Amino acid sequence: MARAGSARLLAPPSGEVASLADQAYSALRQLIVSLELAPGSAITEPELTARLGIGRTPVREALRRLALERLVEVYPRRGMFVTTVDVRDLARLCEVRVVLEPEAARLAAERATRTDLDEINALLEELAVKRRRDDRLLIDLDERIHRAIYRCSHNQLLEETLEWYYSHALRIWALALDRAPDLQAAVLEHHDLLDAVARGRGERAAALMRAHVEHFEDAMRDVLLDA
View 1 (cartoon, rainbow, N blue to C red):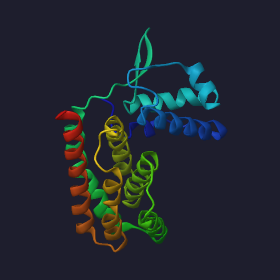
View 2 (tube, helix red, strand yellow; view 1 turned 90 degrees about the vertical axis):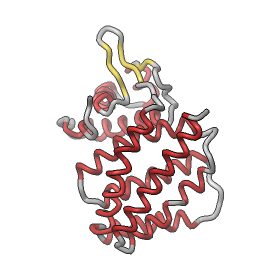
View 3 (tube, one colour; view 1 turned 135 degrees about the horizontal axis):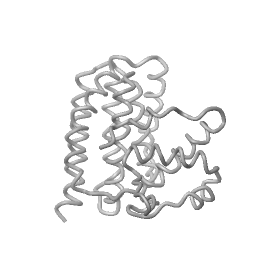
View 4 (cartoon, helix red, strand yellow; view 1 turned 180 degrees about the vertical axis):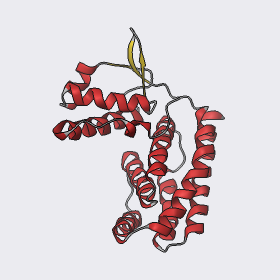
């Protein structure tokens, strides 16, 4: 099984190609996680290069990274496909996340730099805005909050591992969007978590993150597994 974060072990291409490969990776990952590239669908490089407006070499490098992250599968003589989404992975994902995400939150509270805290405070201000957001904006905000906490842990291995698991959890979330409970309320749960990180309260941040991950699993199970 591909290990979380293992894509980062590849020697990155240099110069402009590296930048384009990162752009291609981010764009393709977003298409897969949002289910815009449907689970199980075939992938062809010419279609992707045309869709993204990025050359063949960066797209190929991005696809290699996505294959290592188990978002893309390659079958000899058959081609390349977006991996399917198995909702039974929900419990396994949460078993890992409920251990690692609280630790990332605790470390973030202990290690956040002034620059990190500026980002955390900006996210808190964004959460304080009362206007109703659409689902895509809410998911984008949730992603930015989780990734900020991962970065603030200042543990690259932990950050890369959690990025991998979070991507797979997002795909399951995308399956349930039309039936999920109040998405805005779920994202607003992060306010107290970010506040704990900003105040350096590691144990409280860990407890809040643990509760958040458990709540996510419960909500997704109710929608997807008990239907």
